Length: 154
Image (cartoon, rainbow, N blue to C red):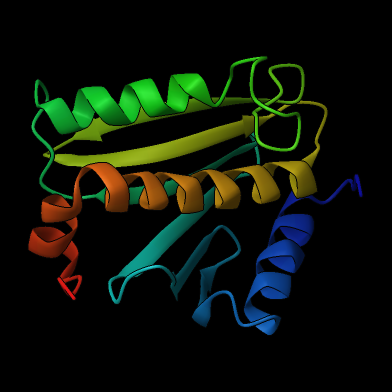
């Protein structure tokens, strides 16, 4: 669904995830900021910038050093999501969106900028991307998750 109101479309998409029980405790801080619990017990902060058509999970991964193996691995993982070798439903289509990773004050944020106001696609892709990233972290960096997200070792 394409809509002239990006904020309305993003909010509706996030509320649909919450109504299906994917997100817990979805709260709307403003038209552009949402907080919910998902994947870990630590609340996630999701921001949407209407003017830039960018959605971002702010401070998604705390305590990540710039030159660490973890940071390099996360960057490589995101680069793989753009590959034509992935099935279409798993990859980020560069004609529809751009993904970016930023690190500031030791925390990593993940952003996705939609093209052609395709907000439903953007929300779907960034949510799937974060899910896939956490699955990858469970497989490759479990110690990081236990130290920073209090994930049980059982």
